[in-house]
Amino acid sequence: MEESWDFEFLSRIADGCLSFLSEFVDDWLANDMRVSIFKILLSWLIFSLVAIHFAWKVYGSTVNDMYYRQGAGQNGGTPEAAAHLSGWESKAGDPLKSHRD
Image (cartoon, rainbow, N blue to C red; front, side, top):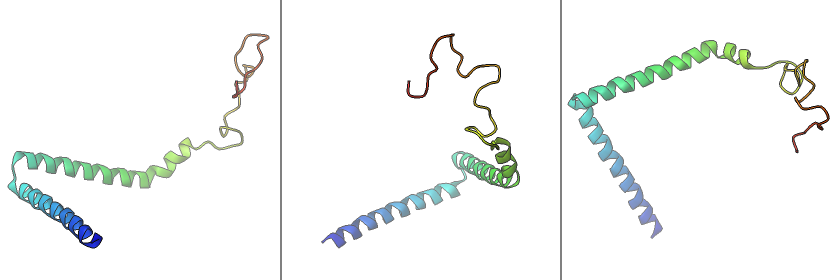
């Protein structure tokens, strides 16, 4: 009994996809303004994605190296605190706070 229900469900999905595709092909071949705008936007999207892909292939390692911090420490080469400040800026006599406070 479950097999017939699964087959019916799959056949409904297949019929829905086929009807959508047939309407899409009919609209695609209609050559009205709506389809022309869609074709222009679709080609622009595909062109942009291809250009981003090739640009990342060429310049990706350079960009990654620019933002990758090298060196030892918590943040790569960044010092823990600025040299002219003593840890957290605080008033004299205040205890230093940690993450847990």
